[in-house]
Length: 423
Image (cartoon, rainbow, N blue to C red):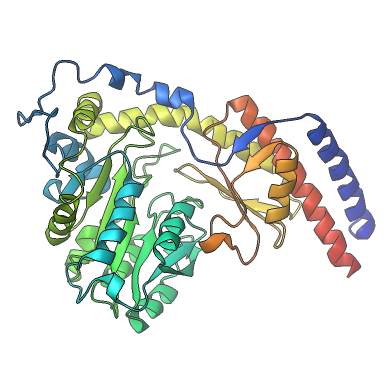
Protein backbone atom coordinates (compact mmCIF):
# COMPACT_ATOMS: atom_id res chain seq x y z
CA UNK A 1 0.00 0.00 0.00
CA UNK A 2 1.47 3.31 -1.11
CA UNK A 3 -1.64 5.40 -1.79
CA UNK A 4 -4.31 7.07 0.34
CA UNK A 5 -5.18 3.84 2.14
CA UNK A 6 -1.61 3.37 3.33
CA UNK A 7 -1.38 7.01 4.38
CA UNK A 8 -4.66 6.70 6.29
CA UNK A 9 -3.37 3.62 8.10
CA UNK A 10 -0.18 5.44 9.08
CA UNK A 11 -2.19 8.43 10.25
CA UNK A 12 -4.50 6.25 12.33
CA UNK A 13 -1.53 4.63 14.04
CA UNK A 14 -0.01 8.06 14.67
CA UNK A 15 -3.29 9.29 16.14
CA UNK A 16 -3.34 6.36 18.54
CA UNK A 17 0.29 6.96 19.56
CA UNK A 18 -0.41 10.66 20.06
CA UNK A 19 -3.48 10.00 22.21
CA UNK A 20 -1.40 7.71 24.43
CA UNK A 21 1.27 10.42 24.61
CA UNK A 22 -1.23 13.03 25.80
CA UNK A 23 -2.57 10.65 28.44
CA UNK A 24 0.90 10.36 29.99
CA UNK A 25 0.73 13.97 31.20
CA UNK A 26 4.36 14.80 30.49
CA UNK A 27 6.05 18.08 31.41
CA UNK A 28 9.31 18.30 29.45
CA UNK A 29 11.28 21.28 28.11
CA UNK A 30 13.61 21.22 25.09
CA UNK A 31 13.54 24.96 24.41
CA UNK A 32 17.09 26.16 25.11
CA UNK A 33 20.60 24.79 24.79
CA UNK A 34 21.41 25.02 28.48
CA UNK A 35 24.06 22.87 30.16
CA UNK A 36 22.60 20.22 32.44
CA UNK A 37 23.28 20.26 36.16
CA UNK A 38 25.87 17.47 35.88
CA UNK A 39 27.76 19.56 33.34
CA UNK A 40 27.73 22.55 35.68
CA UNK A 41 29.02 20.26 38.43
CA UNK A 42 32.21 19.80 36.39
CA UNK A 43 33.15 23.36 37.31
CA UNK A 44 32.25 23.16 41.01
CA UNK A 45 35.89 23.84 42.07
CA UNK A 46 35.42 27.40 40.79
CA UNK A 47 33.33 28.09 43.87
CA UNK A 48 36.40 27.67 46.09
CA UNK A 49 38.59 29.93 43.93
CA UNK A 50 40.51 32.15 44.03
CA UNK A 51 40.79 31.63 47.78
CA UNK A 52 43.38 33.98 49.21
CA UNK A 53 45.14 34.34 45.87
CA UNK A 54 43.42 37.49 44.69
CA UNK A 55 46.35 38.93 42.71
CA UNK A 56 46.82 38.17 39.03
CA UNK A 57 50.03 36.97 37.40
CA UNK A 58 50.92 40.64 36.86
CA UNK A 59 50.19 41.42 40.54
CA UNK A 60 46.92 43.17 39.74
CA UNK A 61 44.62 43.31 42.78
CA UNK A 62 41.55 41.76 41.18
CA UNK A 63 39.30 43.03 43.96
CA UNK A 64 39.70 46.63 42.85
CA UNK A 65 38.55 48.86 40.01
CA UNK A 66 40.15 49.04 36.58
CA UNK A 67 41.52 46.67 33.99
CA UNK A 68 39.04 47.13 31.14
CA UNK A 69 41.13 44.88 28.90
CA UNK A 70 40.73 41.95 31.32
CA UNK A 71 43.32 39.71 32.94
CA UNK A 72 46.14 38.79 30.62
CA UNK A 73 46.50 35.21 31.87
CA UNK A 74 42.89 34.44 30.94
CA UNK A 75 43.26 36.13 27.56
CA UNK A 76 46.33 33.98 26.94
CA UNK A 77 44.30 30.83 27.60
CA UNK A 78 41.60 31.77 25.07
CA UNK A 79 43.76 33.49 22.48
CA UNK A 80 44.33 30.19 20.65
CA UNK A 81 40.79 28.79 20.72
CA UNK A 82 39.33 32.12 19.57
CA UNK A 83 42.16 32.81 17.08
CA UNK A 84 42.81 36.30 18.41
CA UNK A 85 46.23 37.73 19.43
CA UNK A 86 46.40 38.33 23.18
CA UNK A 87 46.75 42.10 22.84
CA UNK A 88 43.69 42.21 20.60
CA UNK A 89 41.48 40.13 22.91
CA UNK A 90 39.29 41.70 25.60
CA UNK A 91 38.00 39.66 28.56
CA UNK A 92 34.81 41.23 29.88
CA UNK A 93 31.71 40.26 31.86
CA UNK A 94 29.77 37.01 31.85
CA UNK A 95 28.05 37.32 28.46
CA UNK A 96 29.22 37.42 24.85
CA UNK A 97 25.64 38.31 23.86
CA UNK A 98 26.02 41.43 25.99
CA UNK A 99 29.17 42.31 24.06
CA UNK A 100 27.39 41.79 20.74
CA UNK A 101 24.47 43.94 21.87
CA UNK A 102 26.79 46.67 23.15
CA UNK A 103 28.91 46.60 19.99
CA UNK A 104 25.81 47.29 17.93
CA UNK A 105 24.67 50.03 20.29
CA UNK A 106 28.11 51.63 20.22
CA UNK A 107 28.10 51.48 16.40
CA UNK A 108 24.76 53.24 16.46
CA UNK A 109 25.96 55.97 18.81
CA UNK A 110 29.67 56.41 18.03
CA UNK A 111 31.65 56.38 14.80
CA UNK A 112 33.26 53.05 13.97
CA UNK A 113 36.80 52.97 12.58
CA UNK A 114 36.37 53.49 8.85
CA UNK A 115 32.88 54.97 9.13
CA UNK A 116 31.84 58.43 8.00
CA UNK A 117 29.12 58.83 10.61
CA UNK A 118 27.23 57.11 13.38
CA UNK A 119 24.80 54.46 12.21
CA UNK A 120 21.92 56.18 14.01
CA UNK A 121 22.36 59.14 11.66
CA UNK A 122 21.90 56.98 8.56
CA UNK A 123 18.51 56.37 7.00
CA UNK A 124 18.68 52.56 6.89
CA UNK A 125 20.83 49.95 8.60
CA UNK A 126 20.61 46.29 7.56
CA UNK A 127 22.33 43.05 8.57
CA UNK A 128 22.62 39.80 6.67
CA UNK A 129 21.23 36.87 8.66
CA UNK A 130 22.19 33.34 7.55
CA UNK A 131 19.19 31.08 8.10
CA UNK A 132 18.50 28.94 9.93
CA UNK A 133 20.28 30.95 12.60
CA UNK A 134 20.40 32.10 16.22
CA UNK A 135 17.23 33.76 17.48
CA UNK A 136 19.02 36.02 19.95
CA UNK A 137 21.04 37.61 17.14
CA UNK A 138 17.80 38.42 15.43
CA UNK A 139 16.30 39.74 18.66
CA UNK A 140 19.10 42.30 19.09
CA UNK A 141 18.57 43.57 15.55
CA UNK A 142 14.83 43.74 16.05
CA UNK A 143 15.24 45.73 19.27
CA UNK A 144 17.54 48.28 17.60
CA UNK A 145 15.48 48.65 14.44
CA UNK A 146 18.09 47.01 12.22
CA UNK A 147 16.58 45.46 9.10
CA UNK A 148 17.35 41.76 8.71
CA UNK A 149 17.99 40.19 5.32
CA UNK A 150 17.86 36.37 5.34
CA UNK A 151 20.65 34.55 3.49
CA UNK A 152 20.49 30.78 2.89
CA UNK A 153 22.97 28.53 4.71
CA UNK A 154 24.81 25.80 2.83
CA UNK A 155 26.85 22.92 4.20
CA UNK A 156 29.93 25.18 3.86
CA UNK A 157 28.50 28.32 5.48
CA UNK A 158 26.35 31.18 4.16
CA UNK A 159 25.58 31.28 0.44
CA UNK A 160 28.47 33.51 -0.56
CA UNK A 161 27.17 34.37 -4.02
CA UNK A 162 24.17 35.98 -2.32
CA UNK A 163 26.29 37.60 0.40
CA UNK A 164 28.76 39.10 -2.06
CA UNK A 165 26.01 40.51 -4.25
CA UNK A 166 24.13 42.11 -1.36
CA UNK A 167 27.15 43.74 0.31
CA UNK A 168 28.52 45.06 -2.98
CA UNK A 169 25.35 46.80 -4.10
CA UNK A 170 24.00 48.35 -0.91
CA UNK A 171 25.95 50.62 1.48
CA UNK A 172 23.22 50.30 4.10
CA UNK A 173 24.14 46.63 4.60
CA UNK A 174 26.49 47.07 7.55
CA UNK A 175 27.16 43.58 8.76
CA UNK A 176 26.54 39.85 8.84
CA UNK A 177 25.91 37.46 11.74
CA UNK A 178 28.11 34.38 11.70
CA UNK A 179 28.34 31.36 14.00
CA UNK A 180 31.32 29.91 12.15
CA UNK A 181 31.91 26.64 13.99
CA UNK A 182 29.14 24.12 14.73
CA UNK A 183 26.60 26.79 13.81
CA UNK A 184 23.35 27.26 15.71
CA UNK A 185 21.27 25.26 14.85
CA UNK A 186 22.64 23.28 11.87
CA UNK A 187 26.10 22.44 13.24
CA UNK A 188 27.80 23.70 10.05
CA UNK A 189 31.45 24.77 10.22
CA UNK A 190 32.53 27.38 7.69
CA UNK A 191 34.89 26.21 4.96
CA UNK A 192 38.20 27.96 4.36
CA UNK A 193 36.82 29.26 1.07
CA UNK A 194 33.82 30.87 2.77
CA UNK A 195 36.03 32.55 5.39
CA UNK A 196 38.35 33.84 2.68
CA UNK A 197 35.48 35.22 0.60
CA UNK A 198 33.98 36.96 3.64
CA UNK A 199 37.35 38.57 4.32
CA UNK A 200 38.07 39.55 0.71
CA UNK A 201 34.70 40.67 -0.67
CA UNK A 202 34.24 44.29 -1.72
CA UNK A 203 31.56 46.04 0.34
CA UNK A 204 29.68 49.22 -0.48
CA UNK A 205 29.78 50.14 3.22
CA UNK A 206 33.31 51.11 4.36
CA UNK A 207 32.32 50.24 7.93
CA UNK A 208 30.96 46.75 7.19
CA UNK A 209 31.45 44.33 10.09
CA UNK A 210 31.41 40.55 10.41
CA UNK A 211 29.93 39.65 13.80
CA UNK A 212 31.87 36.40 14.29
CA UNK A 213 30.11 34.64 17.18
CA UNK A 214 32.49 31.75 17.82
CA UNK A 215 30.28 30.41 20.60
CA UNK A 216 31.22 26.75 20.06
CA UNK A 217 34.97 27.12 19.44
CA UNK A 218 35.86 24.17 21.72
CA UNK A 219 32.50 22.40 21.94
CA UNK A 220 33.27 19.18 20.09
CA UNK A 221 30.99 16.15 20.05
CA UNK A 222 33.42 13.75 18.36
CA UNK A 223 37.12 12.93 18.56
CA UNK A 224 37.66 15.30 15.65
CA UNK A 225 38.38 18.87 16.72
CA UNK A 226 37.09 20.72 13.69
CA UNK A 227 39.27 23.72 12.77
CA UNK A 228 38.17 26.85 10.93
CA UNK A 229 40.22 29.53 9.20
CA UNK A 230 41.44 32.57 11.15
CA UNK A 231 39.03 35.33 10.16
CA UNK A 232 41.07 38.19 11.67
CA UNK A 233 44.18 37.11 9.80
CA UNK A 234 42.20 36.63 6.60
CA UNK A 235 40.63 40.09 6.84
CA UNK A 236 44.00 41.72 7.51
CA UNK A 237 45.55 39.79 4.65
CA UNK A 238 42.96 41.14 2.23
CA UNK A 239 43.41 44.72 3.39
CA UNK A 240 40.33 44.83 5.64
CA UNK A 241 41.85 44.61 9.14
CA UNK A 242 38.85 46.25 10.84
CA UNK A 243 36.19 44.03 9.25
CA UNK A 244 35.72 41.30 11.89
CA UNK A 245 34.46 41.42 15.47
CA UNK A 246 35.15 38.07 17.17
CA UNK A 247 33.05 36.99 20.16
CA UNK A 248 33.27 34.04 22.50
CA UNK A 249 32.63 33.05 26.10
CA UNK A 250 33.04 30.40 28.76
CA UNK A 251 29.26 30.18 29.24
CA UNK A 252 29.02 26.54 28.13
CA UNK A 253 32.48 25.72 29.44
CA UNK A 254 32.16 26.58 33.13
CA UNK A 255 29.08 28.19 34.71
CA UNK A 256 26.56 29.37 32.15
CA UNK A 257 25.49 32.36 34.23
CA UNK A 258 28.88 33.20 35.75
CA UNK A 259 31.35 32.93 32.91
CA UNK A 260 33.53 35.36 30.98
CA UNK A 261 32.77 36.92 27.59
CA UNK A 262 35.45 37.84 25.04
CA UNK A 263 35.77 40.38 22.23
CA UNK A 264 38.55 40.21 19.65
CA UNK A 265 39.28 42.54 16.77
CA UNK A 266 41.87 44.81 15.17
CA UNK A 267 43.82 47.20 17.42
CA UNK A 268 41.72 50.12 16.19
CA UNK A 269 38.47 48.27 16.89
CA UNK A 270 39.67 47.25 20.35
CA UNK A 271 40.57 50.85 21.17
CA UNK A 272 37.13 51.93 19.92
CA UNK A 273 35.33 49.38 22.09
CA UNK A 274 37.38 50.08 25.22
CA UNK A 275 36.84 53.79 24.78
CA UNK A 276 33.10 53.23 24.74
CA UNK A 277 33.15 50.68 27.57
CA UNK A 278 34.96 53.20 29.76
CA UNK A 279 31.78 55.28 29.74
CA UNK A 280 29.69 52.45 31.21
CA UNK A 281 32.03 50.49 33.51
CA UNK A 282 35.21 50.94 35.52
CA UNK A 283 36.20 47.36 34.86
CA UNK A 284 34.96 43.77 34.63
CA UNK A 285 34.71 41.16 37.41
CA UNK A 286 38.41 40.35 37.59
CA UNK A 287 37.95 38.02 40.56
CA UNK A 288 35.81 35.80 38.33
CA UNK A 289 38.39 36.06 35.55
CA UNK A 290 41.15 35.04 37.98
CA UNK A 291 39.27 32.00 39.24
CA UNK A 292 38.69 30.92 35.62
CA UNK A 293 42.39 31.27 34.86
CA UNK A 294 43.32 29.29 37.97
CA UNK A 295 40.75 26.58 37.23
CA UNK A 296 41.43 26.11 33.50
CA UNK A 297 45.21 26.77 33.77
CA UNK A 298 45.98 26.83 30.04
CA UNK A 299 44.56 26.00 26.60
CA UNK A 300 45.21 22.28 27.15
CA UNK A 301 43.17 22.55 30.33
CA UNK A 302 40.26 23.97 28.36
CA UNK A 303 40.31 21.04 25.93
CA UNK A 304 40.59 18.51 28.74
CA UNK A 305 37.63 20.10 30.50
CA UNK A 306 35.59 20.07 27.29
CA UNK A 307 36.32 16.36 26.88
CA UNK A 308 34.42 15.88 30.15
CA UNK A 309 31.49 17.85 28.71
CA UNK A 310 31.58 15.76 25.55
CA UNK A 311 31.34 12.56 27.58
CA UNK A 312 28.05 13.78 29.01
CA UNK A 313 26.62 15.34 25.85
CA UNK A 314 27.46 12.77 23.18
CA UNK A 315 25.16 10.04 24.57
CA UNK A 316 22.26 12.50 24.56
CA UNK A 317 22.84 13.43 20.93
CA UNK A 318 23.19 9.76 20.05
CA UNK A 319 19.86 9.02 21.76
CA UNK A 320 18.08 11.73 19.74
CA UNK A 321 19.55 10.45 16.47
CA UNK A 322 18.70 6.84 17.33
CA UNK A 323 15.06 7.63 18.13
CA UNK A 324 14.60 9.84 15.08
CA UNK A 325 15.92 7.09 12.84
CA UNK A 326 13.80 4.41 14.50
CA UNK A 327 10.55 6.39 14.45
CA UNK A 328 10.66 8.53 11.29
CA UNK A 329 13.63 7.23 9.33
CA UNK A 330 12.67 6.21 5.82
CA UNK A 331 9.22 7.79 6.06
CA UNK A 332 10.05 10.91 4.08
CA UNK A 333 8.45 12.98 6.84
CA UNK A 334 11.64 14.54 8.21
CA UNK A 335 15.38 14.97 7.90
CA UNK A 336 17.85 15.97 10.60
CA UNK A 337 21.44 16.96 11.18
CA UNK A 338 24.18 14.89 12.81
CA UNK A 339 26.50 17.60 14.13
CA UNK A 340 30.16 17.20 15.04
CA UNK A 341 29.85 19.84 17.74
CA UNK A 342 27.73 22.54 19.28
CA UNK A 343 24.47 22.19 21.17
CA UNK A 344 21.70 21.55 18.65
CA UNK A 345 20.14 19.19 16.15
CA UNK A 346 18.04 20.68 13.37
CA UNK A 347 14.90 18.72 12.60
CA UNK A 348 13.35 19.61 9.25
CA UNK A 349 9.78 18.42 8.75
CA UNK A 350 7.50 18.70 5.72
CA UNK A 351 6.91 22.26 4.55
CA UNK A 352 4.00 23.84 6.36
CA UNK A 353 4.20 21.46 9.33
CA UNK A 354 6.68 22.85 11.88
CA UNK A 355 4.29 25.11 13.78
CA UNK A 356 1.69 22.38 14.02
CA UNK A 357 4.24 19.84 15.23
CA UNK A 358 5.36 22.27 17.93
CA UNK A 359 1.73 22.97 18.90
CA UNK A 360 0.83 19.28 19.15
CA UNK A 361 3.96 18.62 21.20
CA UNK A 362 3.07 21.44 23.61
CA UNK A 363 -0.44 20.02 24.00
CA UNK A 364 1.21 16.76 25.02
CA UNK A 365 3.45 18.48 27.58
CA UNK A 366 6.63 18.76 25.49
CA UNK A 367 7.80 22.33 25.00
CA UNK A 368 10.02 23.00 22.00
CA UNK A 369 11.69 26.15 20.72
CA UNK A 370 8.98 28.02 18.77
CA UNK A 371 8.86 27.13 15.09
CA UNK A 372 10.28 30.06 13.15
CA UNK A 373 12.73 31.06 15.90
CA UNK A 374 15.57 30.14 13.54
CA UNK A 375 14.53 32.98 11.19
CA UNK A 376 14.24 36.78 11.52
CA UNK A 377 11.02 37.94 13.18
CA UNK A 378 10.15 34.29 13.86
CA UNK A 379 9.03 33.76 10.26
CA UNK A 380 10.28 30.60 8.58
CA UNK A 381 8.84 30.92 5.05
CA UNK A 382 8.78 27.14 4.67
CA UNK A 383 7.46 26.48 8.20
CA UNK A 384 9.76 23.46 8.29
CA UNK A 385 12.62 23.97 10.77
CA UNK A 386 12.53 22.86 14.42
CA UNK A 387 15.54 23.26 16.70
CA UNK A 388 16.20 20.38 19.09
CA UNK A 389 18.25 21.13 22.23
CA UNK A 390 19.30 17.80 23.82
CA UNK A 391 21.60 19.08 26.58
CA UNK A 392 19.40 20.08 29.52
CA UNK A 393 16.97 17.17 30.18
CA UNK A 394 18.03 14.00 31.94
CA UNK A 395 18.65 11.07 29.57
CA UNK A 396 15.32 9.54 30.55
CA UNK A 397 13.42 12.80 30.02
CA UNK A 398 15.16 13.35 26.70
CA UNK A 399 14.20 9.94 25.34
CA UNK A 400 10.57 10.48 26.36
CA UNK A 401 10.54 13.92 24.77
CA UNK A 402 12.06 12.88 21.45
CA UNK A 403 9.79 9.85 21.19
CA UNK A 404 6.88 12.22 21.78
CA UNK A 405 8.14 14.67 19.15
CA UNK A 406 8.38 11.88 16.59
CA UNK A 407 4.77 10.92 17.30
CA UNK A 408 3.79 14.52 16.52
CA UNK A 409 5.91 14.53 13.36
CA UNK A 410 4.22 11.38 12.12
CA UNK A 411 0.71 12.59 12.95
CA UNK A 412 1.08 16.04 11.39
CA UNK A 413 3.06 14.72 8.43
CA UNK A 414 0.60 12.00 7.49
CA UNK A 415 -2.31 14.40 7.94
CA UNK A 416 -0.66 16.79 5.49
CA UNK A 417 0.11 14.07 2.96
CA UNK A 418 -3.50 12.85 3.12
CA UNK A 419 -4.78 16.39 2.67
CA UNK A 420 -2.47 16.90 -0.30
CA UNK A 421 -3.67 13.64 -1.84
CA UNK A 422 -7.31 14.65 -1.39
CA UNK A 423 -6.72 17.98 -3.11
